[in-house]
Amino acid sequence: MLSINVETSLLLLTYLPLLAVITMVFRRYTRRLFRLVRQSVSALNQNLQENLNGLQVVQISGREDFNYTRYQRINANNLGFETRSMRHETIYTSFNENIASLAIGVILWFAGGQVIQETITLGSLILFTRFIDMLFHPIVVLGEQINILFRAMASGERIFQALDWDESLHEPENPVTLPERLQGKIEFRNLEFAYRDEPVIKGVSLTIQPGENLAIVGTTGSGKSTLIRLLNRFYDIPDGSVFLDGIDINEIQSKDLRQRIGVVLQDFHIFSGSIHDNITLGDTSLTRARVIAAAQYVNAHQFIETLPDGYDTQLSERGQNLSQGQRQLLAFARVLAANPEILVLDEATANIDSESEVLIQEALEVLTTMRTSIIIAHRLQTIQNSDRILVLDEGRVAELGTHDELLQAKGIYHTLHNFQFRQDSGLRESR
Image (cartoon, rainbow, N blue to C red):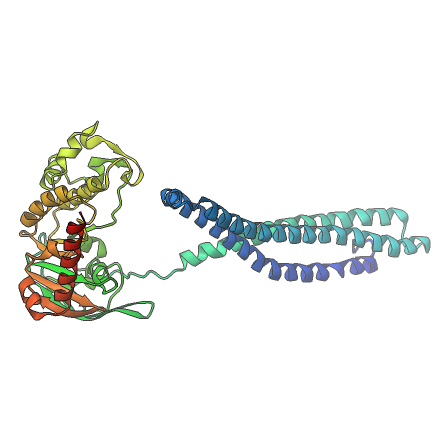
């Protein structure tokens, strides 16, 4: 183009800065718009997943119309952002195409005068217009790809946010190798912990001797479950706060630590697969005989044998083809098969019927004599025989002693015990 006509070429090049400026303005505006599109899609998917997971609650409470209206509102919000983004993509693409047509018109007007003045030939003008098409066609195509690129960048921002997230748990560079079998002594030394600058555990100091059975009670939000999570290193804690057999748990690889602590939660997870696989959890060192023995120990063997394929019975997602009590017994068998030195029960018998609870309590009496045990319970009747009872209040150690000692102290435990006793008595009378 420059070899044919320098003046016309320079005139044409003045359109490129205009395209660049328009692209920058479009990029700045659409970046925010595409980000809103991704956020609205996430909100839509989250709402859909929430409704599917809580489908039974929705049906029981008759919230179908309410939830449908809410979904429509979120969907309409997403539709609005998507429509705006498509409108701007269309405007940007049309602008690129029209600017190319406008450039050809200007060149025809300007160079046409030169043809009349015989400064250039008509053949050169026709060749020049072909070159213009060759110049602007890639620019127009690039503009279309820029729309896709900007959408991808908005999605990429969310991905990079996840990839750049600072790991909340930092593993030791030179972890301590634990002995084959731990004694099970646990020490909390002035432990402090906060969730997002909100203190939850406040200066807890406590020593649990090997083989001791310690119960932890307290009102909701007192820090009972948080204390267990910190023992399992689900969060980073200050050095010198928690020790296992005299070893700072910050010096222990989290995987090694959790293999020594068996935890049974009130709300636990059952994987799709066989009952045998749900007990072993992929640990190939657990033999079938050991799995069966663990199930017998918690009285789960009886109901497993009645299933069509016994221990090879396939469970659906979250174990929906088992009752709540059966799933709880399965969780007990899972922990017992691993044979940890420390046992943690967080409201583990809350969802079991009275008959099953009696059987489990019998097994636990034998089980807890072999290892250090920490039992979190709201029903105080289940922990009266514990070696010691720890009462937490707003993240602090409020009381510590045996059942009889705490009743004589007439403190928080005494109040909780009398309150539950009156509740149970009223329930029995109503029946």
